[in-house]
Length: 401
Image (cartoon, rainbow, N blue to C red):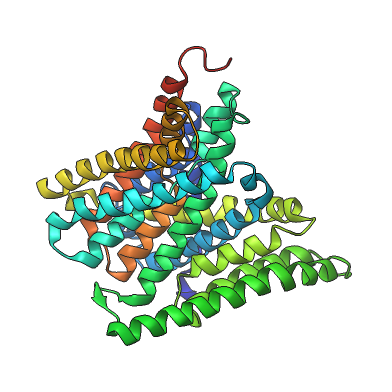
């Protein structure tokens, strides 16, 4: 690898330029940037250009290293997601948010597993497909509501709160799944192994949460007063990376769970916005584009058989219906009128980074087959395109008022 560093840095430059070029083009077409970066990866991947087969980049370790850098982007992304959470904002609409967010995880999990099971007859894999469908990305919905002047409406506030509940429950469900099921879909150790794994996971979650919420902000305040260049930002990097690694090595959890907890701990620090804005350039300028392009680089559309195409269509349909039904019903039980509940359900349809993260983890661990991974990528693209259209339609031409 060392002898090929010039070629590797050229590869990194190419991937980032293409990713950002795709993001720019997507934004020019009034679509989310993530969509352009995903499609850029698909073009460069084995589906079309297969960049890793080019003579200059056909070197041992290149693809693996790009994927590792992308996984660091995933960890930073989840740490920053934790930094953005405001528990006080969630409490304003806690009943609706709690019911909508909970139902919005259960419905896709159950319906997704039911749809996936006939394709391979494997229950753990089917459950994992449901897990992937349970994650929501409301950034597109929030942007749409902001353009309509409705972000601070009851639907908008409940949407943000439900997204918090949705993400936390989806991560907890992932943590439970990966603790009790081994890669390949085999159960991990029977009832005794299950109880041991749950105890290990629970102990780590409690200790990590206490460390992140009670100790980390105090350490951050002390570091902030020291004459060390970028000490606070260095601490944020260390906390996110260390808790991510500890979650997997010590707690038997996904690394993104630990990263999320680290961000959640730092979210109570007065300098949380400064930390977020200083992490953002490294994350979104380098690591996250490599992750999003990497998703496309790993998806091979040539593996799409008629069965895979049918699976993809079914996945997109259940992705839309499960969120509308689940979140809508939860919001209605929480006190929303039917039209408000309908709007909230539509706002929760879009999948994004978390869904792609879960899909990438599932492909690496053997929980998802290649054609299922391609189907998930197609589902993310489809729901990203559909959500703004459906949400604007639900508010009608007078939505701004």
